[in-house]
Length: 89
Image (cartoon, rainbow, N blue to C red):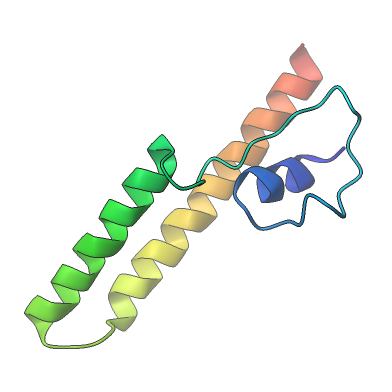
């Protein structure tokens, strides 16, 4: 099982029904409704909408780039942590 697959499953980007996981592995989506990450993501989305409203635009390209880049950073860090854990433990 790859770090990429785990990342995609827990972030809701992968269909668990098509993922081949050992029966002993249970992964939960960290952004599920009501979860801590889900609540934080909802709050971030609301703040992004509020900023766009203040700017008088429906969507702001620079703001979208910030969010896209933060997601890329999150993925890089997550996969590094997975590799360190896999290699060292």
